[in-house]
Amino acid sequence: EVALRKAKQLGRSRRYAFETDDAEFARLREDMRLSMELSVEIGDALERGEFEAFFQPLFRPSNGRIVGAEALARWRHPSRGLVSPAVFIPPLERSGAIVALDLAIFEQCCRFLRDRLDKGAVIVPLNCNFSRLHMRNDAFPETVKSIVDGFGVPIELLELELTENIVMEDLERAERLCRRLKDLGFRIAIDDFGSGYSSLGMLQNLPIDEVKIDQLFFHRDLSDFRNATVVYSMANIAKVLGLVVVCEGIETAEQVEFVKGIGCDIAQGFFFSRPVDEASFGKLLERARAHEPLTRSPLRKEDAR
Ligand code: C2E
Ligand code: MG
Ligand code: MG
Image (tube, rainbow, N blue to C red; front, side):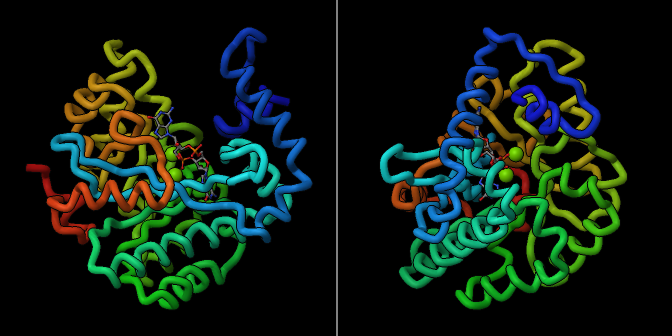
């Protein structure tokens, strides 16, 4: 089961073998055990409002400035504390309740921005993740638009993340949906790029703004010429196509240096900050008061000072 899940994460028609003493195997097995144990509680937890958005800053590798954040769902379980998405997302996807979770997290982001706009506080654009299940719903673009409008937040402050796998499932449908979202004014990022089936045609044809290169590439030995070349080439193609390049999972100073070298616009990872709760993220923004002006598009494309 664990190997099957891992293989599916990697894309279709993949093979994955686990060693039983593998640390990742142990972690995944624990996530699945917990997931099964908690699956009955998860639906109610959503109604009880036990899920909340944490925020992980997106930063410019050249100067360490915050230029955005990604909202990541956490379940504040009454007795277990914080539960990770690896545990609650698979059962929520099976039941379809992930749709409600995504919208709840999205709403929290809009409320957060509204609040800070009212206070005149520092804001940054926020990225939100959306499950494959939204793709089946033609009204999805209008649904998210009406949430943003309800809060009166400028639409360009919200960026929607769709994973590469979602998009590749039905490229034509994805193209239609992305076009509609773009027409409404949203920014769109392709998440986990390079981790499954990717296609260069996808980058060429989809009306997207940003590519988030999957963290697996940065956790390889980057002194190996082949590893470095693969990720350099991905970044380069995205840049030539005019897309903003985000590098995920940046944990060390060496990785920061590496991504600077490949022309990465924005980095995300534990090196700068782990995902933090809303209050801590607010404080982080206060400390960053001297940051760049906070409108996204010119900011994200401009070369860092
Ligand atoms: P993602 O969208 O690719 O998010 C990035 C994940 O990488 C997050 O895991 C983040 O905590 C982790 N990460 C960030 N920096 C580092 C680093 O330097 N090293 C390592 N090892 N990991 C890092 P998280 O929060 O556990 O979320 C996992 C996945 O769950 C997300 O991957 C996303 O696909 C999904 N997810 C999270 N929240 C939501 C949500 O509200 N809706 C939907 N549909 N999916 C969500
Ligand atoms: Mg994401
Ligand atoms: Mg990702």
